[in-house]
Length: 287
Image 1 (cartoon, rainbow, N blue to C red):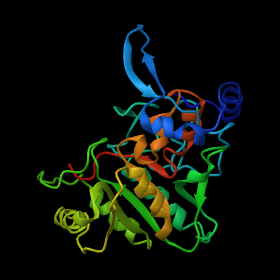
Image 2 (cartoon, rainbow, N blue to C red; image 1 turned 120 degrees about the horizontal axis):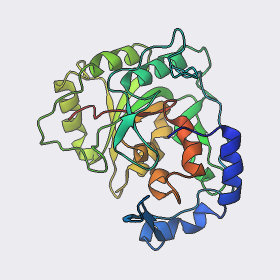
Image 3 (tube, rainbow, N blue to C red; image 1 turned 45 degrees about the horizontal axis):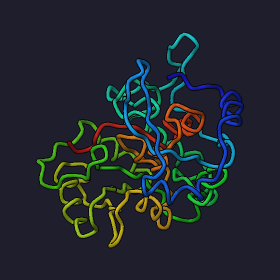
């Protein structure tokens, strides 16, 4: 899908959005609000929970210069790095991969290195985490304080928890990408919808695959009483200035993607600006 210009998104959103997300979140959790999506042939596709995000339009946020830009004819601009072969993403509201510019491990690494090398102090820097307090109005990103910079790497395949018993096979070339990122002083933090008691097993697997040969990475897993990945993301900003999040589906960045009124609508398009800049759709790091 070709992203609309920002002004067009704002104009379209202003006519379609409204309400208060905070008022409908309990209903959203109970499944009381839903609609049936219909494909282009008039067939039922699936039931999607309905929620209005914010009382207005998501404003555009400043972003670092993209690691690759397309000229009008689709050719890469001069000096832009070539996307890695695994550069895949999904169309808004979908998880099946389709080619897309600005995603993949190569783009992720280039973004993190550029962010660390731009000379800006971490305090006041925009995080890759959505500020949950802003979801009832105009969603914005969190702001970093003096936390250590980090990259969040999601291990879960789709919406399924990472399987500790499945023989692991690392993504080819990822170890070198992570080595470059750690060389910039950025921590690699692995997240999964597993209990904290599994932290040692997760790190053992990551080390055994060669993705963390020195055994210096960290984990963020479910604490007692937690059941959702969003609860992990909500805590991530306490200890880390999250520069980027890598996952194989959009809900790995924030669960708001699972509750959009229209997965192809203006809110989805506004959030889409972060794909390839802070949010990176990537293959599974460990299969």
